[in-house]
Amino acid sequence: MRRSVPVAAVAAITSAGLLLAGCSGGKGSSEGSGEANAATKGVVNASDEKGGTLTYAISDAPESFDPGNTYYAFIYNFSRLYARPLTTFKPGPGTKGNELVPDLAESMGKPSDGGKTWTYKIRKGVKYDDGSTVTSQDVKYAVERSNFARDTLSLGPNYFQQFLEDNDGGYKGPYKDKSKAGLKSIETPDEQTIVFHLKKPFAEFDYLVSAPQTAPVPQAKDKGADYTKSVLSTGSYKFESYQEGKKLTLVRNPQWSAKTDPLRKQLPDKIVLNLKVAQSTIDKDLQSGNTLVDLAGRGVDGQTQAQLLTDSKEKGNTDNTLGQRLVYTALNTKVKPFDNIECRKAVEYAIDKKAVQTSLGGPIRGELASTVLPTDIDGYQKYDLYPQKYDGGKLDLTEAKKHWAKCGAGKTTTTILARNDRQDEVDAATTVIDSLKKIGVTAKIQSYPTSKYFSDYAGVPKFNKKNNVGMIMMQWGSDFPTGYGYLQQILNGKAISQSGNTNLSELDDPEINKLLESAIANTDKAAREKAYAEIDKKTMEQAALVPLTYFKVLMYRSPKATNLVSTSAFSGQYDYLNIGVKK
Image (cartoon, rainbow, N blue to C red; front, side, top):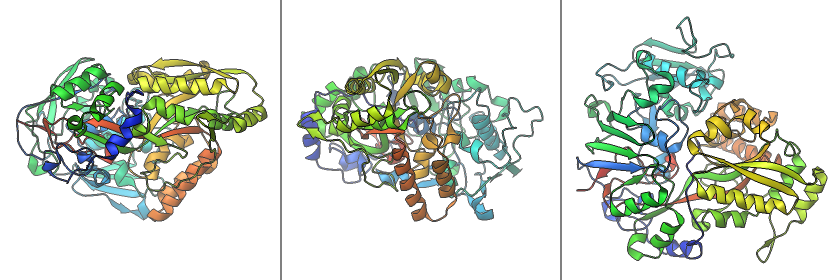
């Protein structure tokens, strides 16, 4: 899943790790408030108190609020307030937040045919905010529109397109389906039952249907790309108003019932999301209580970080956590000179990872990385194919120059992409550029906004080829908390799409593709994890990307918010399902 990236600076690096390491943890209940990392170990300010306005803010505008047309973790998280997928994650601290539970579905899926067929029953009595009843046909339609109308809705993953049985490229989505019959591989024998028929067994399918792409959409109310402006709600909140680029306001959904929803509490009267607010302003508003949650879960900026970690009282309102994420530089295997593996290996040795770590905010923002899988994903194995050696603070470039000579590219130019509203990402890209100058590579930055990064630029292979884009700055986290959920969309050749693409290296290695396909069919969890470790190593042997840091976030926890819990399932962000307002 594409993850938001924090803004950080170097100011607090030296003391940050020491100060936070000395803080006590939470106790797993409401008395954890005021203790650093309390929300990583329990629910802080646990409360069922209703009322008030819960205010979120974000420094950009999300690419879309349409649950079927998004791929950022924070919208996956936030969308559950108004859109119910078949399954979802139960609020819980850290890895306890990885527990998958039924949401729109009555129970987890019933597999048959060796794991090639999965059947779900949706809960009876669930209604949209307009009073109409949710049906299994609405879930089927939601999957069809989100995975097959890629010319209209290109921003989400395409798992269903890859794995549904009767899709051989002929079905072009509901907007072009003149027969209106839809996919034969998704059956709806009655209004409560939905059956998915796959090409091959998929052992982790319950995780796949936790994506908001399975949140129901009634065909008669679909507005294509404009559906993002007025999503029909099945959750505890509904859209009241949406001012594009400025503000989204949610209010209680009167058709929501706790009898059909054991997860949501519907606490605040209103939820307001302010868009395009400067990160420094968000930080100040979090501390004053004018904003209670930073939607993107980006963490505070460098100046705020320094302030928080040197103030004993404010330090107690911080959470520093992993989130199944990796910060890396993707090397485009289809663009010269990085279509040559020796050139890519040279870059593996040449990028000064310690300098990049510093530009990202120091160790508190993540440890140095050498693998594709983060340390908190099952299947991770520690190794380093391209060990970096330092003489004092200076990186030894012997191996880098040796491989660059084998590559034969000589002095060359390339382009590196970064998001212009992610200052730390731009800073990291600048550090990469400085590193590569020392082996004869001149790179220039082209930066673009988060909201368009994958739809128009980094995720568009034609754009990258035309603009000589050899490197792309990226942060990635798992679509769901398994090795497959992490690796599939960034490494499988079948995941490459013409827009919204997240396989930024454009890697299409037959061995890796085959390992991914065979692993997901295996019902033996240990065997799958062994395969994921093998895929990791084969990717690094191809030098398709340069791991930089195993990302950590430093978040400010507002004392005025209730039910705050940092969850691995959503990248270490606070779980947005039941946050309330402290009176």
